[in-house]
Length: 319
Image 1 (cartoon, one colour):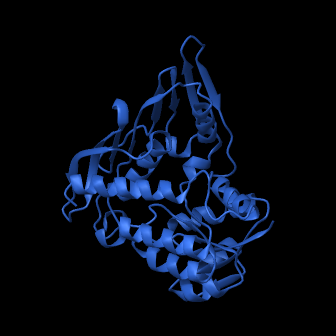
Image 2: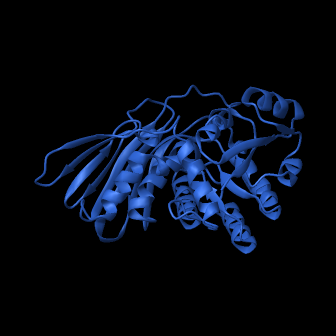
């Protein structure tokens, strides 16, 4: 099945992802839309895209099967609802939205309309992380008891930058926290207890945070995020029969260290296609070919659980 794709929002992340479509058999990037006709045309020229639209409404009315929504988080809800109403399948950049209410609204609209929607949590589709999930599912690690790690990335504070702009969903939790919380969620589920401590920049958005998530029977996740210091960016999944380290940087993983009780240590290396966004694009194509309206790897219930957890982290940090 061939999938004709459009991109909504020709920003920085879209510039990277756009080149990945050519690496996926059956994926055709045929259109881009923006509120600025000039930006849309410039993006189309850079990436060899046939159609450039000066409004999102025109893009959603165009002959495309699926849309990659790459605008800032705060703009996702309005655009996603319009795309769903137009019957377009959606891959929505993380964070999905800036609130539980908005995430719920998109999910309800997608399910009512029967339209495929998935959060663009590309890490879940990388071969290394897929292998880790299969290892856990096989029981090789026993019961997963803990997931811990970090995603620290120093960034100079600039209140005009999207990363730090509260109106655009800025702050460490929505930008970095979504990665670590989603990573833990796929192995432990939604937490019963959420604790967080950290700091904030002058405009009130969070600069960094230590996050402790508690689950039934004493299981836990311990995560660090922040813009104020660099860090390795690794994850460890620890079970009753062994542990696996996802070597830095985990969100674009290619290497695992596997240590099972009584077995020799294994160091595994995995190839990925392109930068790695190609794997989630291919997955969407597979889901559409199978007639699915949700991904079995990144289901909407997982997206909602992560959004709820992020909201609890933000509340603990005073936002």
